[in-house]
Image (cartoon, rainbow, N blue to C red; front, side):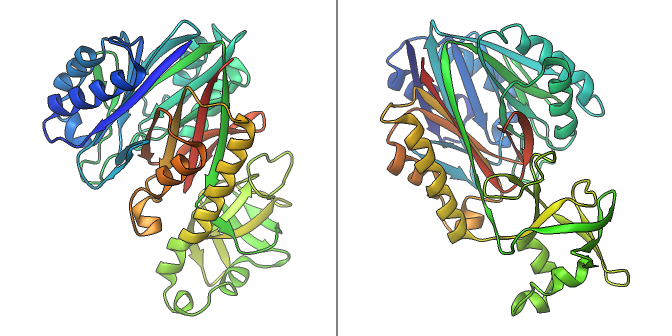
Length: 393
């Protein structure tokens, strides 16, 4: 049996915030002491790292503790953006074995970190397994980290997000047990008798039919469908976007195949990447990923209403998979470019989750990027929400 609960607090004092969130979580779970606790906290609380870790242990009684700093936190009760916040998930179960981990320093050591994480996670690979990964956004290379885990352990489903902060500190924090670190990757490997239902929702939606990259090198696209790449891009610019290129680059992106072997940009099969440079003289687009000739491509628009529609569709899919079963608990990793900055108001994602899936223990954060499996491989996502639901087996 899995007994879980979640709580959140916006109190300014770290000790009080952790105590309040932890008490709410234990009360929802109906337990006095947890096996495992996951905490997300805004960077203001990380400045009191010893107090944060000690308070979390005292409030929950958990021996297995992990978490990280975030630009915002969330539970089923709502979302906290732009202010102090702490969210805590606890659970107690004889079905799930949880193994927290912390690797530091992370900078330029992603392959080594992936090897170590794979060793810990693969010990229980014969059982159902899920890896929660919380790397430092500023010092890690998530694609290298994911690749190293897969190289050493094969496919293990990974969910998570880049640890983040408000943008003022320029430092993120990773939590494991009684340690709060920087320039690290924290997380937890879950193994045992449970089911995981993972799906994603994109904040950017296609505005073109699939195209083909016909000339490219590295991250530079020279031609799309045998026409200069910048010319193809420019034809999409209408009205104010045509007059303000900087604004256009904030809302228009490219979508590339998540699975390069399938080379598909069908719904749910692509990853969003920023356009990072333009060369009007040569007609070149630079994008935030490596591309190659023959690769499929779409252009996508960041738009609040389209994002709501996609969120609704993702939750409907999750509801069909659950077939009436209530999740024991869940994780929601949301991009820090979603939330109020996308919709114009706070709380949209969690409101949709409650409305469609009902009330259950949920914890989440606004991260620098998102991590999730698509097919039999894990991927780096942007402008995306990742929802992972845990049910009893």
